[in-house]
Picture: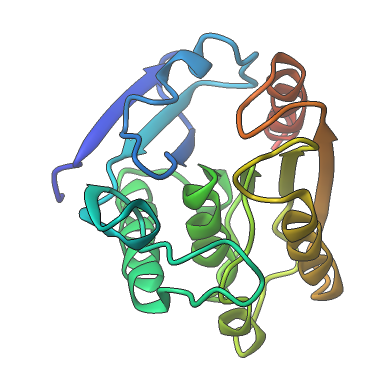
Length: 218
């Protein structure tokens, strides 16, 4: 089994649900550790927080930082680093397989991601035709949507998307268009907005706890 570049935490004994959670641009695997204690978990859960590769990021003047793919801009016409995006998608799919190899059922694997990490998990969870338990995208968007147009998108994967109405990094309009694209592709999208910027809120975490309770009876 390949060693994880990141952090792993288990809540409860004999975890039967795995949440693979990707951080945002410039952060690292420790970024969302505090959220674990704020979630009301439905079952024993293994959290897997991987690190993004180190790479130059164009929008930040070429500075080297942890990034799931290069960012050239967030506007509707900004070019997308599709190669970098798909390299990170491959990382996530290897992590999914890692959980399967450890005895977690595919429908008990949830992908979560914030900002850039959310973009990666949307592609990783919807782009290969195999259903997983669910996908959580926080303050995120769907770059390179055309890559999913030629994919067999599983329509039985629930997706929770949450965004701040005052997000200064990824516009609400861009996020709404991404949600609309997924809904038009027959994806089961739970879309919510919160009066906040590019961040998490307590109400959002409470709603995520409620959303995760769907795994109590599965």
